[in-house]
Amino acid sequence: MATEPFARAIAEAEEIIRSAPHVRTEQDLAEGLDYLAGGIKAALHMTWAYDRDFPFFAASTGPYAKLGLDNPDTLYFHAYIRDDAEYVVTGRRGTTADLSFQVLNGDYSPARSPDSLTAFDDRDIEIAPDGSYELRFGPPGTGARFTLGPGAAMLIVREVFSDWDAERPGEIRVHRADTLGSAPPPPDADTMARRYEVAARMLLGRLRTFLAFPERHYLTLPVNTMTEPRPTPGGLATQYSSVGHYDLDDDQVVVVTVPAAGRDVAPYQGFQLGSMWYVSLDYINHQTSLTADQARHDPDGKIRYVVGERDPGLANWLERTGHRRGYLQIRWQRLTRPLGPGDGPEVEVMRFEDLPSRLPYHDRQRVSPGEWAARIAARQTAVARRMPG
Image (cartoon, rainbow, N blue to C red; front, side, top):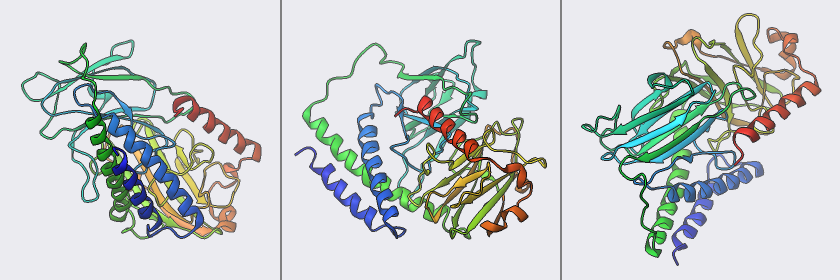
């Protein structure tokens, strides 16, 4: 049976999920099985989207196929490419805070992360008054503006939202320069069988990879702390990040205080929580992330996030949604200067009942139940508008 390798991989993947070291509660297991469903969808989606001669941009993640601590503020797209061909990317710039492009020399694996061969944002390209643009990627000698280095395998595009209500996505397309106007041969049964084998390997490989990745990059850090801002490893040229992990009782909160960078330094600055499956928490129906535009700023120019389980009635509360343990991440993108320790977060653990006396500008952060419901409604509406699938 052509589907047998994939069926075996699903069963093996479920065993990996059930035996993951962080599975301690029924919620952990339920979320793991949900994560597996997203992995199955993503493996089939990405395998069937693999065509380096007739490429197109496919959505890399979404609310129901999460991966790699996906950013709730970002639309991710990818196309598979080869390093010996020329590709043309055309599009129209939206109004998002950032639009960036990156070429990788492979995919993530349990042992390594792919190298970033090229990374830039739209400040490096010419955009017409109507927002349209054209980019050419190719090997040396083709005259393409952006050179595809040896091993180039994937082109990634990110559209990043800071103001979910006001900003709108753009358009983007890709084609190989010498195949536009022609068509690929129809696939045969052997090709379909090979795709199921590839999807099986992808499902297991990506599952193992993103269980191992945070072990190396997050869990070696002291709990309830965050790093200084640093360039994102293997990431965008103008992106910095600060990472950490938390472990809290229900009567505890983590207060994360960070200077508001300002649009002149970082048009995008965002903070999010992630589960131990290394994916975002429910950002549609709960406030588990905030951009600088969404957060309430204090008079001293800082943003103070309160991470906890109990509702403190504050604008910058990030909901743990029952996750005693999880990941913390701040991203700054489209930077105009390097960041230093003074730009990064300070982290403090305190008791929930001490918030009124210890949180600066506590009364200024207050929101009513009606105001909170309106914030959640705005999230639900904005995500439905920009990411329906």
